[in-house]
Image 1 (cartoon, each protein chain N blue to C red):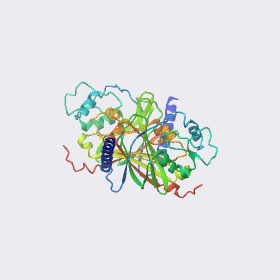
Image 2 (image 1 turned 90 degrees about the vertical axis):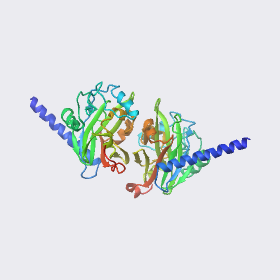
Image 3 (image 1 turned 90 degrees about the horizontal axis):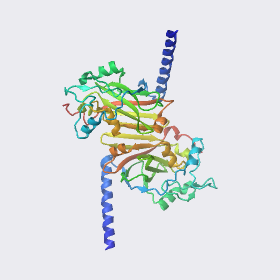
Image 4 (image 1 turned 30 degrees about the horizontal axis):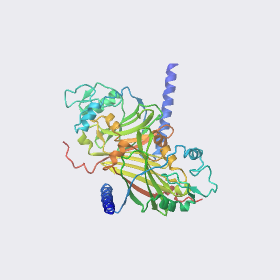
Amino acid sequence: MLFFTQCFGAVLDLIHLRFQHYKAKRVFSAAGQLVCVVNPTHSLKYAPTRCAAAQTSTEQGILPPCHHHEAVHDPQLVPCTCPLFSCPWEGHLEVVVSHLRQTHRINILQGAEIVFLATDMHLPAPTDWIIMHSCLGHQFLLVLRKQEKYEGHPQFFATMMLIGTPTQANNFTYRLELNRNQRRLKWEATPRSILECVDSVISDGDCLVLNTSLAQLFSDNGSLAIGIAITTSKVHSSEAEI
Amino acid sequence: MLFFTQCFGAVLDLIHLRFQHYKAKRVFSAAGQLVCVVNPTHSLKYAPTRCAAAQTSTEQGILPPCHHHEAVHDPQLVPCTCPLFSCPWEGHLEVVVSHLRQTHRINILQGAEIVFLATDMHLPAPTDWIIMHSCLGHQFLLVLRKQEKYEGHPQFFATMMLIGTPTQANNFTYRLELNRNQRRLKWEATPRSILECVDSVISDGDCLVLNTSLAQLFSDNGSLAIGIAITTSKVHSSEAEI
């Protein structure tokens, strides 16, 4: 009996995902764009002082990893950068992607232009929607976060981080685009390196910021479709990698 | 002596304006774009319930003028739509522009693409920056407002209103663009009619919204340059005017 109930649940989930996918295709009518349905994840962390040290150092021009522990002994090791969990893992930059996929089950998508369809926007803050994006020979982490910067007033913050060094990040430009109901909102910027803390990027407000009312205007039945494109920055593309 | 002091003050103002103009030209490098320096104006009103009636009616699909008085006897008359003052004036749509110019001293600029340079962004809320824009045979009102929707957290709201009917407004698309420091933010939408209240557009959040931190990122020495472009909407251009 339990088996049949679970099967029925799985079929319902599939129908729901198919419906979300259809909705996103309708919103972003450009043919050939990959639509990825991203379900929300409630964070298990949000220690307020998690990134305080990292943030202070960034302001002083130094770029430390976002410390989960008191100290990272090997400077070549970076802690887990998944913004969802206080994860004790640390490792080299090259293995961050496989850690995020295997331990945190974050999906990875291929393609220069994709549509990120975040579901259940009504869920209370804090909530994250996360996906990895493989493009132009690099991997990027897209984070959409619903957070109450001011108590009782949740906002949505979206940013893209390169799973690489700040120098590598300077070679790219990412674009996030919302398009619905004869309204269009575009944010273009250089991605930050994952060595900078996503929490500090969001607290600085250096990302796409949406009030709840604006998010509702762009949402369709509780889902928000964000078009993502990554290009090589012309200004920096000739710069040598350190 | 007083005369010389005033002359000296005027010369200083001119130098300041020239400097602001130069800054905007540097930010928006596109040649030939008209840069307009807009100084802030502190509002003399902000009665909280001013647009309550208009807003309720808009939610119900009716589009009333924004009443300053209990009733407008002639339905062809509209009240003064200047968002700065509680002005008792009312008149036909055709004479709103001359009223705004003559009584409220709001400048009018010509050209499909202009740069709106708002100075003194640090001034406390509520503050408005307003200009009229003549383009494609119509006049538009651009309003940038600094307002505390949530106490202690000022935000910037920018919108464009057509000095015309909602049906006429549907024929256009306006674009506001911020561009600085390898970051770009674009908002595109159909302008609202000036018969809808600017206060309700802002309280609905159906406009370009900037947190203080984002506004600072786009500001240069306390001034915010907004590129403005107006085009005819392709979708609606064939629709007949009622």
